[in-house]
Length: 176
Image 1 (cartoon, rainbow, N blue to C red):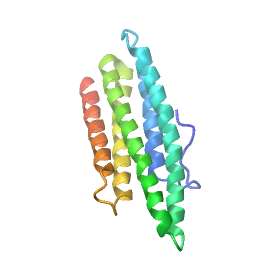
Image 2 (cartoon, rainbow, N blue to C red; image 1 turned 135 degrees about the vertical axis):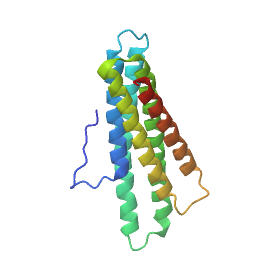
Image 3 (cartoon, rainbow, N blue to C red; image 1 turned 120 degrees about the vertical axis):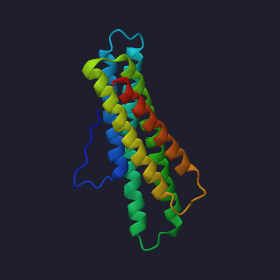
Image 4 (tube, helix red, strand yellow; image 1 turned 30 degrees about the horizontal axis):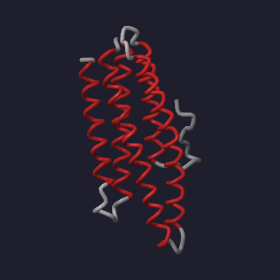
């Protein structure tokens, strides 16, 4: 579970929010997998979800740092030399967030096929949360690369978001 929260006193930005949301989704997936007692791969899925949650928590912190650096560069009177590097990092971290959130959504869809009752509902909800986080992160990549339209990171992030949305659809259908 994420150990940091967003507050009005800490302008961490949307990437931090996306990362902590996806980390929370990963915690839901881990819990749902542990409840799928008859599933042979439940322990492995729970461990994978926990690892993804830890990665997403680290990425959320990195995104908050990159966001703060980019804001500082944008506020500086002479920023040309540092702006490209700051925006590159501000795009790289949400790209990694989008990929990891997509992995959470995919794992949640798998767990939702093997879980029952409230655990299945939690896995499906986790997939939806992770898909939302992937979509938000992909949007941030596109915004941060707005001055570099030939850069393919925005396309890759959008692909991760699309894969996460498809996984969320599969997870929701598993409970229908």
